[in-house]
Length: 90
Picture 1 (tube, rainbow, N blue to C red):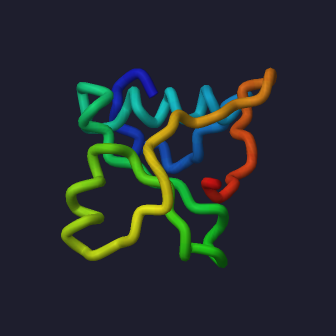
Picture 2 (cartoon, one colour):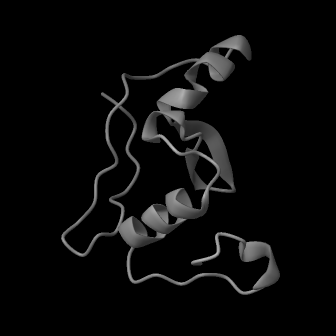
């Protein structure tokens, strides 16, 4: 991970928590500034109807005509650093 060139390793990175995995992905990603991070989250690959996107993807999502169900909000983690379940906004 230190080199930032993970394609050669051919092994998945394993972290102790979701928070650590996300931090590692951001570290080796192309973006330097957090506000430029282009990411999305889905419940699972069988349920891709609802997407949670980073603010950097908002303009592209609007251009593609996607509906927004709520305002941006931060990811939520439990005490062990794992993502809490995805719930639809109220």
